Amino acid sequence: MNSSLATKVEEIWRDVLSVSDGQEDASFFELGGESISAVRLVSRVEDELGVQVDVGDIFEDDPNLASFVNTVVARAREDSAAA
Image 1: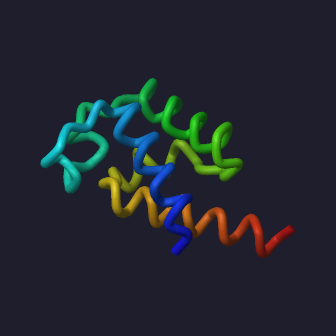
Image 2: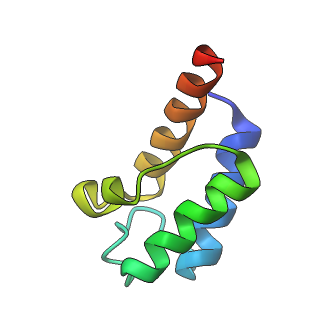
C-alpha cells in the first residue's frame, strides 16, 4: 500500500469529519457524516490526490477510516493501471 497516499487520505478523513483520537474505527455515519461531508470528502480526495471516488460508495458501504483508505488506494491503483 502506498503509505503516503494512505496518510493523506487519513488526514482528509479526519479533517472533514472532525475525528478525534479514539474514533478511528467509527464509520462515516457514526462520525456524523451526511451528504455534504461525503461530497467534501470525495472532492478533496479528487482535488488533492487525483483519485476518483464515487460519493455513492460512501452511502452504500458506510466505511470506517481503514476501509475508506483501502478504497482510495485501490482506485489509485486502478487509475494508474489504466493509464
